[in-house]
Image (cartoon, rainbow, N blue to C red):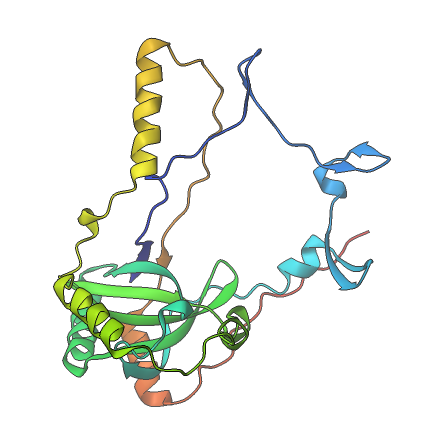
Length: 258
């Protein structure tokens, strides 16, 4: 199976900084105080282990920790739809069959999930990192949504300490419930418009008509392939295993030369 990002950022307006007198893009330099600009090959990643004290990591040390990309999604659990709080979800991906042989397993898993009213939870590796994800029916296909890990979500308790348990006035509560009932309708994303983005786009188009846009050299965007996973294998492994997935293999560490 292949997965493709289900969202896009192209709809939003993005600005670049341009040097107006020359018409050239503004570039940022890596600068060390007291030294000046430095080359990228002189830069390493550092983690602030203690205040003002950093542990420096070489690129090959970090590269050695990256996990090998797997073609499987290890489904280790199933939960009812709606059981997972929205704040745990990160990014959605469309899952599509890679070839005709994969279509049968794809349909089986999709229909089984739909009939059970549940979503699968599993782990897979993408771009060297392990991810938690849910798998659920979406229209005529499947949707994979990555989840945040436990240490990536803040506890809500400190933020809601000011909220007491005192019950609101019945009249106000009744009015609120009536308003909710009157405004209840099926969700239609087309109903909601990004008025700011539309206004900015209109401004850009109007200025482009009055004054020819200046020529600025553009950089080519790096290309990217789709992540491939085997859903049939994922289902078989889940049924046979019934527990936690096997630990993913790490790429062998690179040896330093010289």
